[in-house]
Length: 309
Length: 309
Image (cartoon, rainbow over all chains, first blue to last red; front, side, top):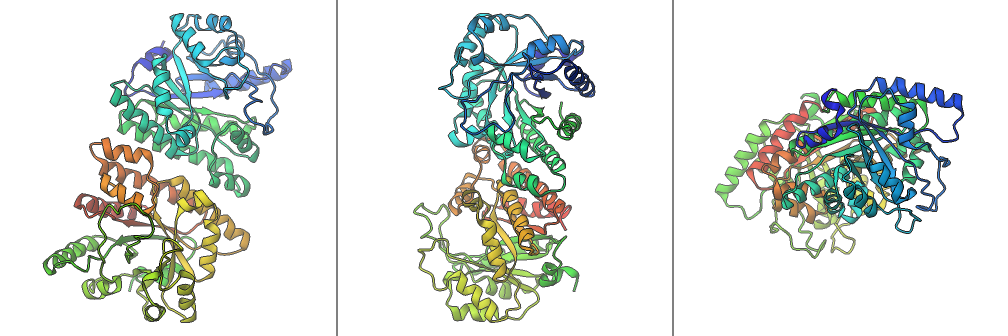
């Protein structure tokens, strides 16, 4: 087992920690057997190329209640990420961080999840997108379950730099989540590097003020190479800058533009965090189903590995 | 005369144009003779080190009417920039762009200014900060004077990326100013690279749509190494990001942080503009009177010259 295969050891290393993750969504439950076979084969080919510290598997919730806008990609329930890992990624020998949209599950289901023993698993628990959503378990209740069970799964929280720009209290939210057990954070997809730096900076100085050791913030990057992907990101609440929107409409190679911008963001944020001894990481997420965007995501991970970790 | 000494030739080169400017404010009118001598000597030592395409000399207006907030640095009338150039920078053999806060002058004064013959001078005409300000000449009237006089002075306009973020019409304003004769634009000090890219992008695609050749946008960068400088920038209307504010309060070397961020912004914007064939430039402005910030500004110009132009 190399040093990268134990997620909690990796996260325990604290200062100087630099993580590189790749995030993907399991296939739809309705996928045909032959399509599933192709998907699994393509996934394996992609993942085998990647020198990542952990794989992220998302847990998709419908979120129809979050916004009245029509969803640009139709919603279709996806496979349970832990089942997909067990049944179709059994060869994968590095850590995996399984997301849990806690509102979908009963407390008993979540309790059984967090009690799973493994030094190869972590979990990120995600609350319902709005407080009015019809949830089976709330995020505070899920955190409480994780604590009471003495879970061995490293716990991560999600964070939204854009929310910080408007409310300016996201750093306090991070510290509360850390107090509830979170040992790392993963952001929503970011395009606005200033917003991400603002959050990291406010978090860093709040930690110093409270004498708390900062934990890694993993910044999520995503190639956006089409108007359809952009619309989906906007629907997810990602603030896509005007220039990127222009490029997608006008440019001859928007995938290349988006790729270059992701690299620039990553260089800016790694310099920023390193200079301040703030542990950090990147997560490359492909939100699209287009091959060209997925291939660019794989190349992005490879390029990031040349200067992260 | 090298190719850099003729400003209009430089601006006429259009696509591929990359400018590097240094901006400074003339000394106060009330300066004592020995202090003026020292200021002039220090200025000469600084400028002689710089391989810039043009010097900018600002024309400071009180702007007391712009905001009810107290001005962090006290206002004191500064020397006329054209007089300062003639009387104290006579050795300077590269182009100079002289700002004119047009509200301070009568139409006759401005008419005589724009009729000045020179291939070594350019001018940027700046309107009053608010429409309610008590102005002697409005910006449209000043543009009109410039046109009617057949002025040989290349005309520049100011632009504010932050205004674009809130109103999203700054690109239309640029095109109108270009129609009035502007052959380049200089931004207010920027720290938010996304806002600057948004403006450049919207301007570029509007030019393409209207079949107009884009002119250079010169992005102004400024070292901000102290809370006092930050307060002054904020008073000027510059949107200083939270992280920079934090650094200035907490960091051990905020000048170095600010310097590094300026380099990052410049690299990001030059890549962006070059990839799109958009003429651009940088202007390094020192708004502070502190030596450490001024020295860092000089070093910043030198570093920018290694990859601009």
